[in-house]
Length: 483
Image (cartoon, rainbow, N blue to C red):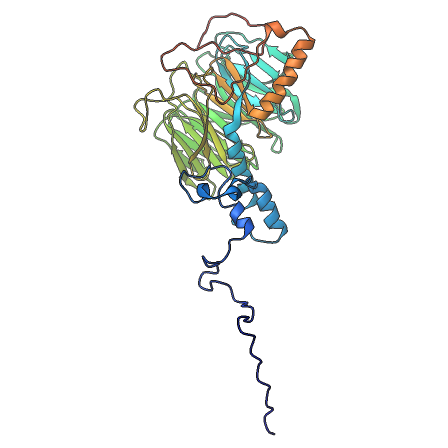
């Protein structure tokens, strides 16, 4: 059979070629420099968190460059709806947006309820504006900072009654597990009633330094100054009591997702990880994490996959469950400890991969600069890089304890015997306007002052006297400052 002769393809008119379906740049799959840049790409070329550099191409563009930059969260959701694979998970975009918002955090309220320094800080698990703070004198305050004069105060015994650890009862948030220098670990409420005493030391030379509780495992754990760790049931029965460290146990923590996994920190320069079901003595640890200095705290991350440790000098470490024996990150950070200072402890953000810790500038620390500020430092938990520093010129003391509330939008800090509450600038303005209205209605305007520094307020020059920080508390008790 003779082949069928196909008609010759007609030539396109001159100047009009067929559409080219190949990518403009087959080598790298990106448009060539001659092609017009897509509008979406022009809008998201610069991070909304970082201003364009002076003299850059973007700063020399016309009016189009002055358009509002789209929010990275909106971009990520839009790409997800369109089915386009995002370069980073959505939570990373959320964290990036939160990191940008940290620059707007301002001091909202302050309170000075104690005559001795604050030693413990714990947020209420279900009320995001309520927290409890313990002092070296054994005082405990339950404070709702959004409501005027809504506090509950338990008076301590004074000298020798320091609160060393606190945890809300997960089954009844009106109750609190506490450990104290008075030599007890107990369960009490906020009216001062003690329901149960779990441990009691027989001598003033020994006391309990921390407490943690697990509802799933129904266990309570505590450690003392002799290196002993005690595991008890929530009914008060002792499961085991072993000397697990050579010296004082400073912190105990149960893994939030694996309640049989226990971390203990000690001044013997170690952090140890245990399986509470198999502890038979000091050699029964799963992992031993040696440090160069005494360790103040060891906290599991909210997902339970990592461990955050703070020594008493200049290191914050992050360990991962994939390899407990080797730190994933070692963050150099000045926070040296001395006797009359509540040890600085780094903590996790409850929702993002962020670490927060107070800074105590050290002239011997590498990178120290004259007149270095005592800031609150926020670090990326994965990279170890600092993402933000918080500071208020009227609250320039050493900030030992920091913790974000369960929602992650408000930060509480302790500075000496002061309690500080930080929030976003727009939230601060809104909340303070509400408080001022309540004060006016109650006729308390003359006895109160609003605590809020605007971002453009200048810091006093070094060496000049600083004003005493005002407070939203109407009644102030004049007491001697004690360590």
